[in-house]
Length: 342
Ligand SMILES: O=C(O)CCC(=O)C(=O)O
Ligand SMILES: [Fe+2]
Image 1 (cartoon, rainbow, N blue to C red):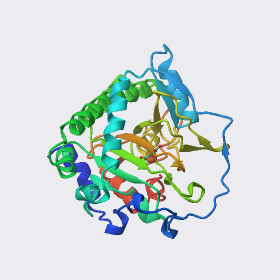
Image 2 (image 1 turned 90 degrees about the horizontal axis):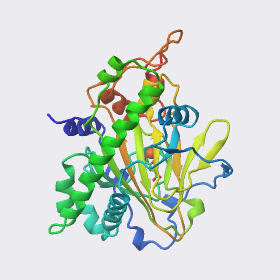
Image 3 (image 1 turned 90 degrees about the vertical axis):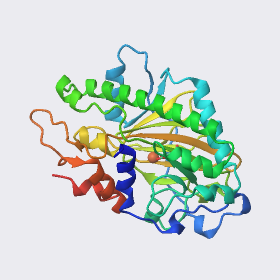
């Protein structure tokens, strides 16, 4: 059985209601519907500080990344080696997908118990209002079936670009994971045991259409990612905000060609809570569509994540398999971590 099947299986146990999958037709609405109107927020955000920007070629890169993971749970990565034209191609293929008429996109709708395809954010059932967002999730070979539904005669480019993109992201995610291990000072044997190259990862394409009333809409509500790490490419439209303890919400300013890397729940567990699983959210724009591609890097679903405990420390979490954690998160995003606290 392939890892792709098992990751999808982890979600299969938590079927969603169709109204928690189907997006509205954003092109057909000219004012913000009540269903998408959120209470006015008085959350302030801080524009004076910015997340660390790290050059992958820096000789002290492991230390810089380790410190950013510990202090922020997020950083922007430059000179990462992913060709700029691959990022642009992936972005324009995502744009091509979301520009299709609504009825065409619905042909690739995520199944109620499925993990891949077109639909709204998985966190939707946990909020009273809907987000101003549509997404498309790809895992391994699912891409061909869905792309054929979207473009019966014209899907080769989309598949090629997304496959190459995922391969490159996988290599980069593995490289970053090894650097983070190095910063955590773990032994080579431990690192060897956690050699997760080719692991069960997923690519999430996100679109936040231009919005008639951006101050009352939410692109993505606050959440943490279930991943080990997430690597995000965004177009030039700002919107991502991260929550920093003792500071509040901080906006991530798009840096041309930079990738945003954030710590997910699984690295938070693995680091024995030394790294925050950074809470983040997305705001929307009145005039411009925001696009992003989030690559969620996960260990294989049947592997066990065990906190790395330094001498003199106690384990903050019990060991947990990736599959069990995905299941806990799907049941209750807010309670998943407390369920495995020691
Ligand atoms: O679009 C973004 O900036 C963030 C996307 C995100 O948080 C996600 O897909 O989990
Ligand atoms: Fe996220």
